[in-house]
Image (cartoon, rainbow, N blue to C red):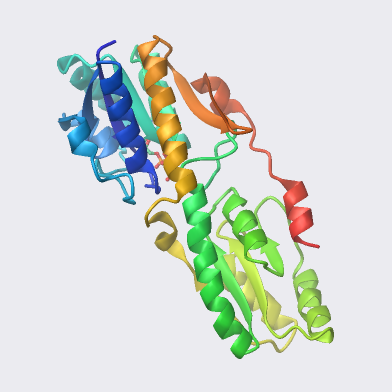
Length: 317
Ligand code: ATP
């Protein structure tokens, strides 16, 4: 294999640029040519390729977002769209594809591999919702962004003796809320995986006040029914509390990647290119116990995400 391409797809995450850089530099090391595809699968269908050399990825390791840009493409979900993408790859004589994205993007990669395209996936999503890997690219940076917000909001909630409900991303997966909630010292963590009653939340406030606590932080994943606003209404129905909500939103997706994410991106990128170099395809890379590994794309996607109940319980003590 001597010519490959790389694309970023779905929601962007900090560290995608560092991964693109690692793919390009690793490919050069193996004497392989790299093309960058703009705007994910949409660009693949529209023939939006550009050559990438080391110099093109210089000074991007610290940048959030993605220099290749990202997109969601409905056309690519159709058989005609995917056929267009395959023709584009053939026209450019590309022998392997590195997809950096989340589970949707990996499903796209799986479809391409079924059409004979050699694909490898790098998990790039802040949600940490991929079942086969302990961490995804961007998760650590997003946690740090949330912690930064918590540190600031703590000042004002303490001054005004308030209950602050902070909503973070995670529609089906509560990992961001869990990790940021534990690291941020939240009094309650609400995630889609573990139901919690409003009475229990109110008890936390009442008991806390009894021993002198003035303010309360509750971190809520967006996938919890009603989100932060719903939780606020329910708490207010049970007592006269001063409650405020904050929805962090897309701030969590941006920013310069953390050291952890830059190193993860560098290791993922090298591993992905090495797989293609060795003719191993239709694989997705991940990390477990600080070891980079790869797994068949179908097998990896079919696993069930396991929520860290131990951390949840320790964090709720
Ligand atoms: P995140 O969830 O972190 O935002 P993601 O990669 O899961 O990232 P999606 O929007 O789900 O983001 O998927 C990105 C793109 O992948 C879609 O716009 C679509 O073009 C393609 N895709 C998703 N699912 C499939 C599928 N089942 N078959 C083919 N292509 C798909």
